[in-house]
Image (cartoon, rainbow, N blue to C red; front, side, top):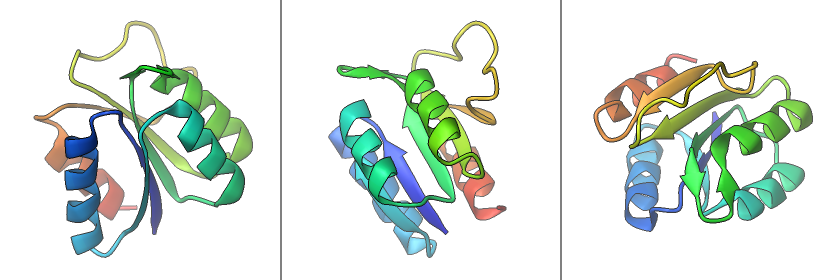
Length: 112
């Protein structure tokens, strides 16, 4: 399984990447929306996990674009600020709170 992990928190992002790689997943990472969009244009992913609030955009917008570009890809949103109000409009399947939902995120990815 190939995963794209997007978060502007470099320490958290790299830690999650290492932990997912140890579980056998191929992981690409991006520090923001622009970098993630470039990776989406160049690669196919089985799952995309994005932070909600980043300096160059929001995860909901990124996941909406991902749904258009790679509709079969599973998509999840995560945030340390709580779940966004409103509905996902099909942009993401699951929401994970940081940091307490990280183990659930791993389960979600590994159960695919």
